[in-house]
Length: 507
Image (cartoon, rainbow, N blue to C red):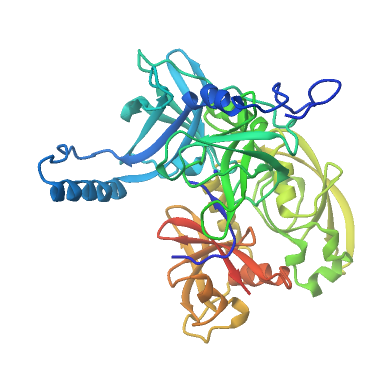
């Protein structure tokens, strides 16, 4: 069990004015006893439980009714069966129907484990006539359900299903997340902790939160509505019952909700899921470089460019051959300071700036370069962007470039060497997965009583990022730690037995 102190966890979470409503507010300008009830009635029938399960689910007889001990053993066996066959679960929301098909929006991480050996089960809940209980269910499973498209960068996916003849769908409308305001009342709906058709309330606590590429490329809404594992992919709606966000992450010290949750804004989610429905993929601009923030550049090297670390900028680590950057004349060791006249202060900003631009569009890249005398000069190049390939292809291309680039020394680690406390008490070795094309650092040993030991890191864990920044070598790892300075809590993303886990290590 990882004993993390604070982690960002991917979840598997009316104001009156004299002149009328404020721009982002629901049409309902005040709360009354039925406000949330009406929102629930309007939205819950369109919220779906999503289960990824093994295709060959064994059929079992019903529980024995004549022996209490046998009945208890039966249900214990069923719970064990569910743990072995239910691979993952989450929530989704129905946003479109046409030609006998329905389209459910959810998180990519909810359905990412789906394969030929698994099937998807969708369960809708509606009011049982004459009651106030959402116990009437419709299940759609097997070949009737298909993943239409997935987008890892935004953590969004679309599921298409064939609607049964007697199914009466409830489509939930998109709202305008740009107009939503901090302090606005919101409602989160989903299936947390296997508790179906759950409703919680709160407000929008913040906007434009960027938590790093491991969570989502998009800038997220922050809310204090209670969101738990299982809420992933469910909607965050306003008092009109319109979607303002798709819930996808929480900030937590123990893996459960502790007051802060995040959702992908509806305007981004609609744009991306429309592309997945219409084309099966999302088109993004692509330059063809790997990069690091300037504060990760050794001080003696950075001094040559005559800039300070706090000025920001992006250091070009590698350039993919024949990529738009290569054709435009971008070189390794260049420092990018602006894209289309907009200052870029970090690799995250640069990635967002390029990815949001249209394929085949031209961008101007202002950069610093050292001449033959190693003196800095400023120049601007124009690149015609390509289309960003799938993430696994990018990983492979960039890995090939790094392996062939003589400026990047191969760092060898002796796993038996004494463990240095400056590395959080870890001995690390290079790690690469040929199947997934992922790279990182494998934990070979953990010093007893070290920060890593206190956080619960184990031998065999694979570290893929530190403070939201990918690590592919011990140099990356140490540079990321160095950049944190006196920061006490270090966010480390760990892969353990195929599952990504966020861990906070206290230095």
